[in-house]
Amino acid sequence: MPVVTAPYKPGTPCWIDLMASDQQAALDFYRDLFGWQGEVGPAEFGGYAVCMLNDRPVAGIMARSAPEGQPLPPVAWTTYLASDDAAVSEAAIAEHGGTILYPAMDVGVIGRMLVAADPTGAVFGVWQAMDFIGAGVVNEPGALVWNELNTADTDTAGRFYLPALGLRPATIQGMEGYFSLNVGDRTVGGMQPIPGYLGAGTPSHWMAYFSVDDTDSTVDALVKAGGTVIQPPFDMQSGRMAVVQDPQGAVFAVAEAAEAQMPDSP
Image (cartoon, rainbow, N blue to C red; front, top):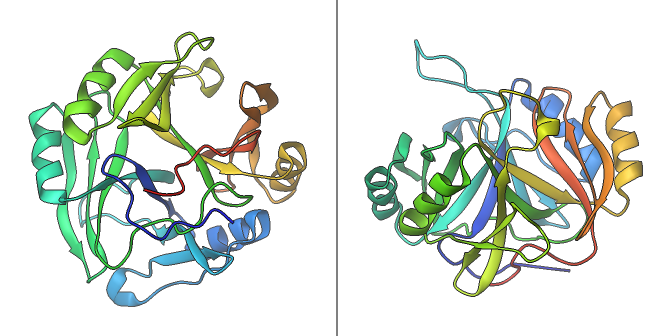
């Protein structure tokens, strides 16, 4: 089992969470789809639920909320990038053209976080680990297997993520227009122009991919549970994937990967 026990290197996707309109319905949906176990958490943490897979943290689900007078955020998955110091990352993000949406804050004794948008509008989180490093299991069915930036401007995004967060883009032979995102000599994610199948006007965003045993049967189960298909299953260089939407509108991908993608150790 691809278990992670040490902190992720800065810049590496390390956690994902979902803002849902109906938290309990989302917990039930992902339990049935991926086998996650989770329940509404303590009130002092806004009811945040840490979902478990094989007794290890795999993702978070929360009820969406906003400060009084502000609009509710969209129902969406957020990718978090690891940082050694959230305050330093916050300053670097602002310096290089990003927008701070929620400044660095303590989350009990488990870590520090912030939420920002890159210069092309893609929203992401930053996580500074203390007692909690993030995903404790990756690259197995039901767990995160890949994180991908779909952006309206790959040049602008590439110039931002390297100095702000240490993510270096690189071209991939045989995949024109697609870039790997690297921390040191390790590929930790991907970047591409926003695919046409997502529809005109789709904003820049980070996409979470979950590993599955069988992409086609997972998509069938998702549809029966009230989800919708954005891009039906298709074969790609690294395996078979589909892009889907949960019953509340959160978009994600499922992939029957030919080989592990997420870094499973620092």
